[in-house]
Image (cartoon, rainbow, N blue to C red; front, top):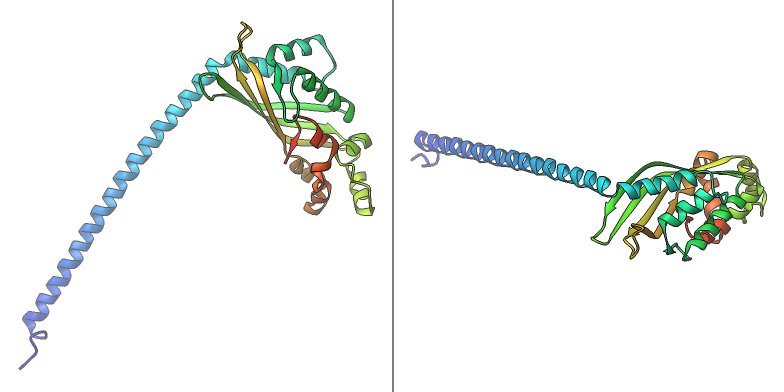
Length: 251
């Protein structure tokens, strides 16, 4: 007697069952893919909507803090080439910053001016140029102005001794020192100015400043060798200006 699993009817039933299973799998797969497509479209719609809200909030912040952005822009423009004790520089500084403005390791307007004087004394020339700036609301009492730019420093013997006093202790370091003398070190930089309202009618004042400049990127553009760059910056925590100035946070 033939096996019940091998009769023509049984074989046809198994084939039909297989076709049904395949059809059901295709339908489930199609339904799943359609559901995924619907979810993707929903997420894209939500993303576009949220991006639009973010753009609107950003634009509103720029309008709301337009006066502070203009004051920060004026500060950068007046101090683009450093501090020369000009009356308009002093006026802009005092208009923008609180008397007790906090730097990295110091406090007060005198500390800010002292930092600028050190820059003037340390380098053959100085140039700090903004590329873009943006206001960001933090809470009801505080906002910040985020500035992205570049800082360019003229490297003479005095500048290199100030920044990297360890260079010149051996032949390799002395060779690097000679390669840097007379060059212009241009580094990407970022400044965050945290501003808040004051009790006076003078408007918002800068309460805290954070400044970071990417020295390694600037050195790489000059030396074009990672080992040489590492030799220059390996003692950066001991380097004079790079560690002593409140606004000079290297990375």
